[in-house]
Length: 230
Ligand code: CA
Image (cartoon, rainbow, N blue to C red; front, side):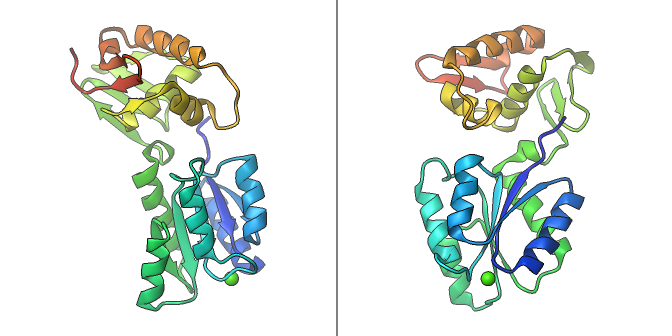
């Protein structure tokens, strides 16, 4: 089954949080609600969310202070943040974006607009979570049907190999360290030896047949998926 994007809602007004949560569930996402920064931090410590919806005015630490904090922490640095606020002044937008927010939405907002913004942020920051297909060369992966084809022929992949390929194909030409692959594919807080990555990469290469050479070993660094078949 496809991983449902986990959305952390940091919002002190329960009516707004509930409305957002209902819409997120309806759109195939998994919402988690925290009413202030301290609770949000506990949620983040437990499981990393895929995106954070962050209210500006919160009891305790403000949304801007939280965005700055999460941007400076290695563990949370790359999580997309969408700021929610009742303020609409230009200055506030600038300080929200300066603090590291990826996007900004002003209350009152339509839930349709919010969902569209969330999907846009996820697509930019984590394309593999939005679903749909990705094609590189003769290889196509469709995350909604869980199918991989090479020149139109179906390939058989194990579940971990599928997740690995999904990640590689969404971030081609980049070098991924074994540690990064463990975090992104196996999940944060999962304690597995880095050697396990090599085992699954080897299996993935074998399953890909002639396209296996698209998956390169970068000596001393990790792996890279390249569109250039060598
Ligand atoms: Ca508030």
